[in-house]
Length: 465
Image (cartoon, rainbow, N blue to C red; front, side, top):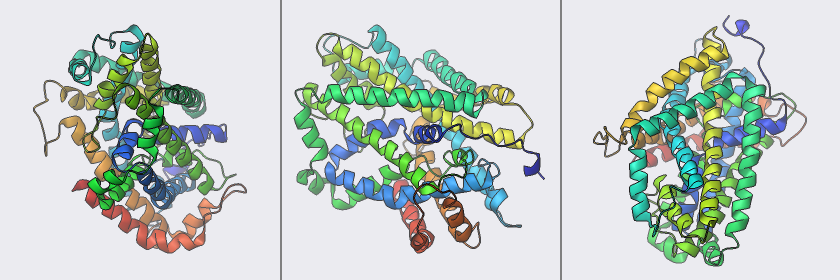
């Protein structure tokens, strides 16, 4: 009854829009700054090989399953499982994990996105350029910035208002139109920054550190650590498991098979991750005598300390210009994810209420702002509040990345392969609907049914421990 009352489902105006928006959801801040660092620390090219291998055996089948559930149901995480499950089954309870994960992600991600905006203006107007800049004194500037509660709250509120405002215009007129422009600009900035950094004097040494297997690093870290790190990075970089990709499957047409679309999305995500290293390492080896961040501790602060000190040490006005363009690139990377997740939240409300997009946006602007307060205050007045040694923002990040994403992915995979769920036959038929694109092979059934859930469960246990 609920489904019959739904308005006709919106669709993307073009395949390009679907690919760019879905890739924008997958391309996140952690993928941009964290991937190059752990690549360099864990053996360079060897890590990249393992990373791509796990994208193939984990990322592709999980993302394809999530897209299939979305397209077959034409619903968001709110009712997609309920639409496809058999009478009496309880798969629809996964909606609480999914929507909870989306809100929890935005509780800290909008805050971190605000840092990118603040630092864009700091470099644009020169306040981030200081005399004799080092990672240490820029760390003091970063600490002063994130503990400025009124500033962070205002910037976070701005992120929330703008992104929900875009979603309120609808899929084609809002989300697709704006995201396509942002993603195109993101790629232009990325390529421009890469070209510039490859001309730096330390580019050769940086590329060798980044892309040539380092035996010493491999021996120091251990092959098991490298493999598990590559497995975790390949999985967590795609934002799969909480329905934020499935929503875009629900807006797809039936003209193309899903495997090829998945490969296109993951290829763009991987391209951005790899290219980011071509910016960071040549710059580090030219102006910072190599990389000073440790793979086990590197966080978003790396952008505002080590990397900002590199921009400061560039000659003349080049550092200010490159720093401004870099943080503009980071704004596009962060806001593309926020818009994608907000669209999932928007669709959830559209299916569960009779409210318009504008009313839903207004309600959620207030709701997400309130929910983001703990992460914001956790940087200043609540900085002494810790759980398991983690501050509020880091704890929220840990729960989403290390628990919700892998747990949700297991649910999607088992639902698509088990006879007690939607089932393999229905899944396999759905992914191969369309006349264009790659076919999803039948021989993957055994792997997806019995092996892939165990791999994800192993990753869940390892990442929590």
